[in-house]
Image (cartoon, rainbow, N blue to C red; front, side, top):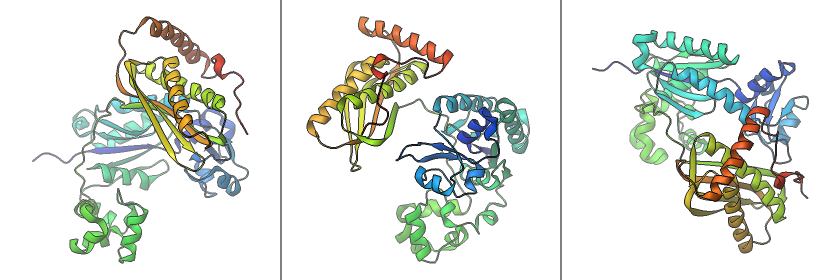
Length: 389
């Protein structure tokens, strides 16, 4: 019989806000809120000081400002967060190759095969926590368990600065009093149906008869009852190659001028091209995403004769798709624009035009890498109207 698995879930505490405090020590101890600062902005992250005012991620920024008028409000700096994330994930890979990233600040690690090298699961968890703090000066919450579901619960349970283990023997006792919504995959509607049926805790769901639950949970009944017993057979799946790379932006005011949209599209295409080149990838299919003020979403795609990582090719293809959509729908204002590349492949030889453009891109990438993302702009972006009426 194989030994029980040793799974660790690592979740960085208030990651975006913590990075901002790290880079700006004057914000330490203050309620820091990161997100879109415009009229339609939402909270991406909130420090624990901000959470005391009821501020949380996905909250409309206008509501956050009402709840915490004296907070420190900052725009996200995704390039900086990815930089710190690479340092964090480098620590993970020192202990196991089996790392499944969930986001830039969260991952599962299967350390079953690492125990002989580094000690038991608690010893490994402690070493990861310490290494992350030493390398980044940030705090990671660590959850340890025999499976993914319990490990994530454990890291949530101990936050902030958590270090908590749920073992197989104590799993049912730990789970029983928790609300049913803590089960992985139980959303608000499912939780509401269960509560109307008098099932409010995980223990009650486990004890319920299958035929009683089937009308409420459908084909997932057996899965959720297994989770309620603390059973989860999902394996930690190492990160897979990107299937697509995209950037999008929601605007404070609806855009109506096609020239302004094209300027925004250049900025987004620049981000996609930069990420493709950084990963030595190229995309054959370019897709534009458009969302109107009435919340209708459209996508338009085109597959190119050869894959590209060239910003200008991505941009021109996106413009053609956007213009075609505008001919179909000439009136709606645009609240969100996005552009992405899919059908990815490793970069290979390019045609003469793409080769010339690639040299320009490489030069711009090098300047930004050294002096920052805003150090240089293409002429198309200079003077771009940030708040069109």
